[in-house]
Image (cartoon, rainbow over all chains, first blue to last red; front, top):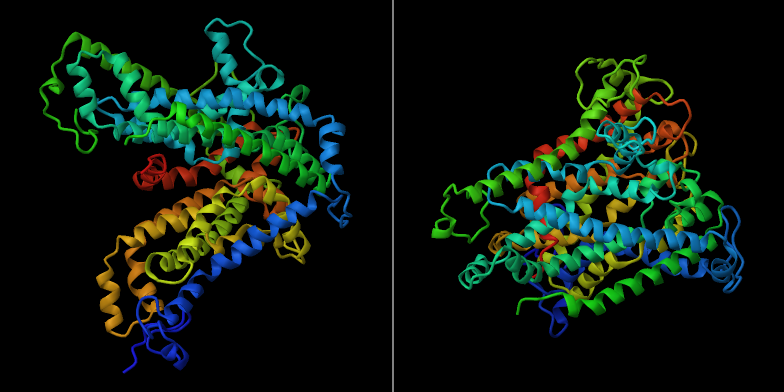
Length: 330
Length: 306
């Protein structure tokens, strides 16, 4: 009797006819049923169909289209003409906000990556102490990670209001007469965004904590017997053993910092305004403004490719440095 | 004191015996002081928000000194107003967000489990290449895909509202039915731990792949599917950029989109905005409260190599 090993994806139990055809039986090297059979292959591709369709329609075609668009003057309601490299030339020589946005984004990377990497490590070191109540603090610190970025931005935008905000009221009450104007001051706007991000320090801390708890305790024991102090243990055991985690987080923070846009759109409005003196004109905000506010989609596609090249270069440099700074256990 | 000891850590090594030396005490005091400061940093903003939201309309929200906890006013009517006010009905927006989240959860659970089943259980040519392709899609540059994806949906009319139907919901839901590399990976790893003997027994009884998938693998994968559902819910509920691009009619707005629009309009009532912000935060908070162990396990595991 033919076992229905390979009934089709749509077949209900018991009602599916065996679909193992004669062709499959007569083909040398193909077992009619069982693992690797032709019917199993057919079933596999049916199971995979959602992904294959999605990858082609939502990823592959858009990827190719993005290349084409960047060489056209496509606008929202007007199909574009091929204009060669004009979009790229325009970005580097004509768009007066282009370099400003790159400057803001690179400044943000220089602020955000170290601040978020170091703060996460410090908090993880605290959470890794063997004391009572740690699971409570761990749970609490992770709370902001599940909250809506818009809600967080609205909350901190309100708290950091220069005249009335609770943070500045607190600073004044402890004797700081002239606290920063945060989002009203071009020199402090990025730091306001950083404080907003620091509220989510728990995310990185949890990842570091997993890394810390994976360090074999024997290493510390052996070092302790050799007379190593706390700093020596941290410097020569914790840091090297944690460097793969740190590398992972570094890449994550770097790429996140490159494409930051969310909180800024919230606090500056969907029109794409960018804070005092364009101090919050992140690259993605410029792309959003050019593409979706002004409707220059072809130009925005070129901006996206430029950003990708910048990002790939930075990630490539990071991987170059990996061998110097990251220690992998043999 | 060993409650949080990592696996493999022996609690009774002589040097770890809890003797209360002054040094040990000072160390514990320092750690707790830092942690309490951190806890205040997390809780006080939430407390300030709750205080503001519980104030009636005629009471100033911004005070000197700042009020971090509700002491005087407990006007829950602000929440009612935020949910029902005709201009910005957050109750309606919450239902819109819930609708999008439900459809996405159905799509994500269905598609990712199908795809993961094929990778975990079936033999076929090109399996390794395809699986590598799934993982490689995680590396595609999102900013580059943004514009052609938008044009694709815009050109086929999946945008805004068409004849009363929120066509802009289609680009926010349909892609969920095509799988997500992170979830595919997670489910495949999970399904590989289910004993193969169960499939084989079912095969001998005449079950096909569809039957094995629906009757054996899916029921046994419920814990992993819950993780997929929770992450999907959080992602959709908190999503801002997608709705910003595809929705144009305020009655179909989601909570974050409406919130972002309201704070940038003039004449905002801050007690109501804070109540609405709490509405935006509450469902994720509740879900987190019930699933935090699983969620954090999922987050933490991505940080470990090997």
